[in-house]
Image (tube, rainbow, N blue to C red; front, side, top):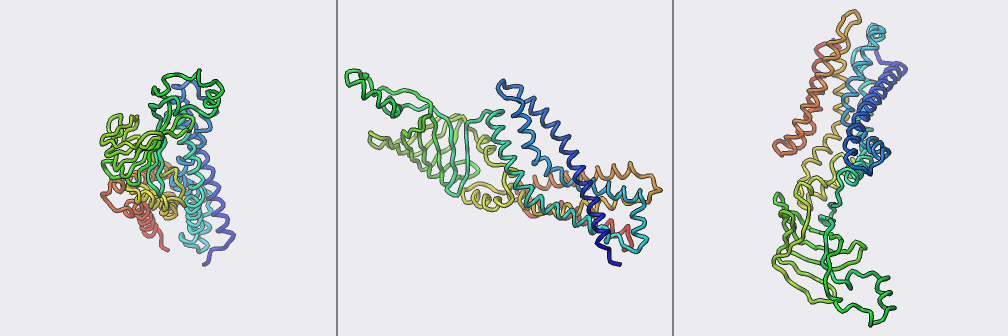
Length: 399
């Protein structure tokens, strides 16, 4: 017997409402705990208003929501099946000649639709929110001034630094006009004496050699804090040591002076290798649509993009994972209304959710360390859950 459109719409609507309510409840609880944690971190700084903390908590929600989505799909499906069974609706449907696969189809379709929406819509929107959260966290909580980005042209790095410059080099246009109006008799006699002034440098490297983090074909641009260009340094390679960048065969270009060549040129820095690694965009802050291009850029620059590949393939597997959650929920929750197995049902759902989460995290960690292939690390949790739910339902049901 073919299931009717009215019944399919009723089951899909019932499940969708339960899923949205459960997800909203879980996000509200997570927002409360995240906000308390952000308030604790912000209490160490005196100049962070509560409005910034509340905004950061909201911006972080999409990241947590995407992690909770499989659990929300599982528990909302369990609750939907339990409700329909308690009201004898599933008993009536099955006694009318419908098989379990026919009334499971609307819920599976909804879960696949939500998986596709998470992949193509929720993830890109959430990536924008998470990126803003990471920027605010870096500025207000971590107080980091270093900025790092990777493009097709290579690695770009910006860091503050104290620059040794003469007064003529750091003077602005207003200062030059003021000196011109004063006359030559008022000019200082030691105009060539150097000063330490605040500024910043922009470091560009065409390639990065892993795992030693050796920069190839490096260019360094020096600027004052007023964005006035001072000098340029070119080097074949650079390595990051303790509190210094070490450049090999550096060529120094400075206006008004002849070109200089220095075999051992150093640049003070507060960066460490861990700081550079953590400064790259996290997978959660990258949109699903931009991930393939960003992965290609990292690989062309010389960085390892395994973690991003696993994240991308994991997003592609979400519709299958959500479908698996519905099958597993049906396997543990469709009991006769006279059986008193509510506690067992809840415990089984929690146990299944924990196993799936642990298996997914474990396999992704193996994939990130390149011990197993990327496709196996990303797709195997969804495939295992799907085959498990399918086999259980085929053994419990007669068609």
